[in-house]
Image (cartoon, rainbow, N blue to C red; front, side, top):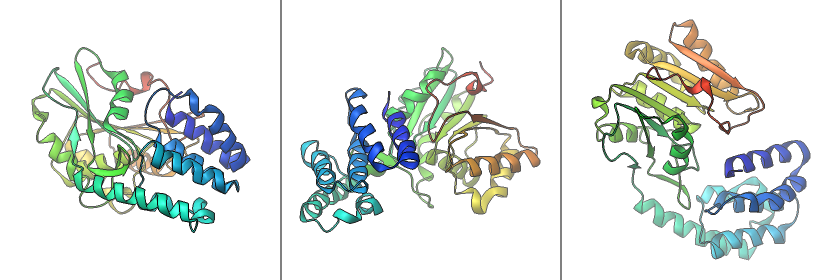
Length: 302
């Protein structure tokens, strides 16, 4: 079990059965994760305990995260409605101040990075992580598609989310990191080029395709959280047609946050004769399937 699967299951329980059962489930199953930093798990435990009325436990989990593990979070994350009952607690205030100071320090030091070092194969897939993820998490997922003629690389945002985790802002700045990366990695020397994203990473791909000269053969959009389509849908369609980019959308049937946006993008692209496919994934929430099956093998080199 990985962190995303564990937390999505926890959210499902919270939505359907309440915070108390979700809290107990996460407590019982957090040890199933391997070695690593799981700041999101401690945050969930804090919120769930607070939401279930166990305020002492909630503050204890935040203390374990901030003081024992040295983690930190974006200031607004610790202003979540679930934490309202403990926000005036002096220990919570102290811990939040520590977290806020670490966030500001990390914000000043962070910069865009990518895994690409040199051209190793004839074709490339560049992936963009989702919010709260890293380049390593992204690469470990998409590398299932790697083979002897396809190089898998990933781009990591400069916008910090929490301890050693990153995010994308839906603004006029963050998507430009895609262009910054591509200009440095011999992009045009590859025979076939693919962009792949998860959640907010999909939005950055659509912005980069629409607002820059970046082009590729196909884009793969997993669980697409894509607010850019709200006011720019026709611009996206026109640029994909102009650049002859194939669009492949993958979305869980239980992904209530992204289903509507995924369907809207697909329906409008289909009507406008863009090369587009959509795969609705049964019993899947806002996450990847455990195994990337044949539906992902759209790359014309396979």
